[in-house]
Amino acid sequence: MNKSKLAVIGCGKLGAPLVACLAHAGHTVIGIDNNQDLIQNLKVNRITWSEPNLAEYLEKYKSQISFESAYSDSFNEVTTSFIIVPTPSTRSGEYSIDFVLAAIKSIGEKLKQMNFDTHTIVIVSTVMPGDTEGRITSTLNESLGKNSERVSICYSPEFIALGSVIRNLQNPDSILIGQPNETAGSELQELLLSMVVNQPKVLRMTTAEAEIAKIAINSYVTTKISFSNQISEICERVPGTSAENVLKALGADSRIGISYLKQGTSYGGPCFPRDNRAFAKFAENLGINLNIAYATDDVNNRQQARLLTILNRIAPNAKNILIVGMSYKKDTDVYVESPALKFINESSTYNYFVYDDHVSKVYGDDKLTFVTEKKLTENNFSIDVAILFVPSDSYAKIPERLADNVLLIDFWGNWSEYRNSKSKVYIKIGEHIA
Image (cartoon, rainbow, N blue to C red):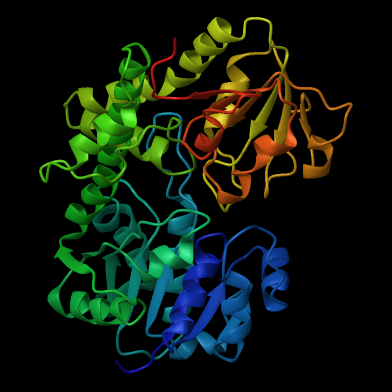
C-alpha cells in the first residue's frame, strides 16, 4: 500500500508498540501524549517498562518516528489518527471514556485549524457498545463543527497482552473493523494489513457490532479459563486423574478448541476481569441477566481460597512462602489483579517472599520481601513452600536453588521434572492430591 503519515494518540504500554509496528510497516508516525516525562523518555528511546522488542523497533525506525506532547504543524499531513488511551473501569463496571473524549476534542480542534480533505479517526481503546456512534461522535461534531462530515470514526480494537504486544499486533487471529461506511473500512483494512506478517481474517461490521464483539470475545475467553479451573478442582479430588489430560480431550473436539483450556491460575491483568464485568453490565443495562459472566467471575474469585485450602491441608505448619512470578503473565512488569497478588491479599497468615524477573516492588504492600536469585541459595534463606504462579521459562530451574525440604506447588507444569525427586515434594495443581 501507499505509505501514510499517521498519528497515535496515547503512547503508553500499548500506544508506543503501535507506533513501532506502524513504523515497521513503512509509515511515518507521530506519537502524541500529554505526559511530558513519557514523551521525553520515548524521544531518547528510554523504555521504563518491560515489553520485548519495543526498544529495538523504536531505535531501528527512529527516522520515521517523532514523539510530541502537543499537536504541532507536523500533524497537518496526517491522514489517520489512532486513539489508544486508557479507559479505566468505573465502580459500576462500565468504562470511563473521558480520555477518549479529550483526545477526540483535541483532534477536532486541530483539524478545525487545518485545510484537509478527509481524515479517519480509529478508536483502539476499549469502549462500551454505543459509545463510538454516541458520545464520541457527538464530541467530534461539537469540536469540529461543519467539517465533521469529512471525518470518519472507526472502531478497531486490538487483542493484545502486555509482554507480547508487538507479536500480537503483527500476528492477530483477526482484524476487527467497526466502520461508519465502506470507504473508511476499506482504507483502514489496507492500513492494518500493512502492519501484520500473517494472514488474519478481516471482520468488518458496524461500530456497535465491533464494540460488542470486543468485550464478548474476552468474556468468552474468561469463561474457558474458569471452566478449566473447575476441571482442575474436580481432578484434584478424583484419584488417577489429571486436568491436563481431560482438558486435552475437550480441546480436541472441534466444537470447543484447545485455546485457553489449560490448568493454571485464575485470570487477571488489566483486561480480562474488567471486560467480563463490563459485558455483564452492558447486558444488565439492556435488562438481561448475564448469568454466565457472573458465574465466571465467581469461579475466578474462589481460586485463591482453593489454593489456601490445599495449603492448609498439605502444609498446615507452613509459615514462609516463596511466590515465583508476581506479574499477571510472563514478560511484563504489570501486576494488576495478578493471581499471585490476589492470593497474597486473601491471607495474612504467611510471610511472603517474591521472586520475579520484572517486578521488583508492589506499591503499597510493604509486607512483601522481594529476593534475588542469589538470595535463594543463601543458607539463611528459609522457606516452607514455593508456588509457581507465572509460567516463564526463566523460572524453570528455581527449585534447584531451594533447600530439599521445600514443598513445590506448580500451577503450570513447568516444574514437572521434579515430580519424582527423592528430595522434594511436588504438587501439580489439577492433579489428584492425596
